Amino acid sequence: MLLKRFSHVYIEEGAESFPLTKRILERLSNATRVSITNYKDVFARSGQNFQLQKQSPKLILACKKDNHIYKGSMASQDFGYRNFYYNSLLLNCVYNCDYCYLQGMYPSGNMVVFVNEEDFYRATRIAIRDRLFPEEPLYLCISYDTDLLAYESVVPYTSRFIEFTRANKDLVIEIRTKSANWRALETIEPSDRCILAWTLSPPEVASQYEKLTPSPSLRIQAIKQCLDRGWPVRLCFDPVLKIQNWEGVYRAFFDDVFKHLPAERIRDVSLGVFRMNADYFKRMKKQRTDSDILYYPFEKSQSFVSYPTEERIEIVETLKAKLMDYLPAENIETWT
Ligand code: SF4
Image 1 (cartoon, rainbow, N blue to C red):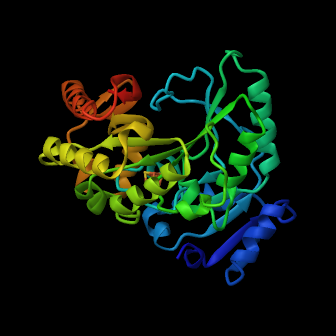
Image 2 (cartoon, rainbow, N blue to C red):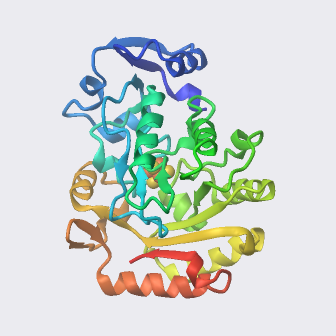
């Protein structure tokens, strides 16, 4: 399905010779190829319609010239790691969740793959060497602005970063996903320093607001497979959406999740309510009129949009208490 999505591949000047480009082109042999000078000419041009492009996204292969690693953001959870970083190996995601900040962050619904992988490894090695707290590892999230595992058959960054992490003892990575693609990891030896982080939402949320993603039950099956193989797994109940009867819906969902997954083998859980950079939210709302979730009377504080403070506290405290039926409080990281 993924391969069929790309009718066109744009190739930036200079990106043609990278082994990753050659591999991707082999797998997309039916796609029309177009040479371009700079990926931003296609990806960043003004007047694009994100949602329209999402219906038939194009793939852009390019080299990222700088910023191969970023400091972690305030809106993200660091799980106690003080050397917290993330990177952007791909821009955009195969899915198109109604609440996704990428709609407001990027001018285009097309997909960019950066093929100069060695530059990302080099920047990571430098960040490890120069980390502020040398007694702690560098914690790197490699799947924030995309869903890396969903692309693994075409762009094998997940497996390659796992091997890179194995070879760098002061590195811990998080791979966040909604994919059910556990087979991509089937032949890879698990590593304690590679955390597979699954975002899970109740079926009531997933069916309405995460329409292109694998169902929660398929994700749970994938998680089970990975736990059985010995991977460290994080569950992310994030973003929690304040839908009708949210408390009953999320409580029932947690019971269902831990009926299928052994809670004692879950490394940790992240719990957070919907929140978004205010500028991204504004831009995304202009483009997307088909989703009621964006029309809640959110509150703007600092540069973020989220539920009003008392509602945020109520949601997080209520759901954390429920999660504590299954996990100790210290294994539950919250964002209020
Ligand atoms: S899976 Fe994550 S990154 Fe992808 S569209 Fe949904 S929210 Fe955005």
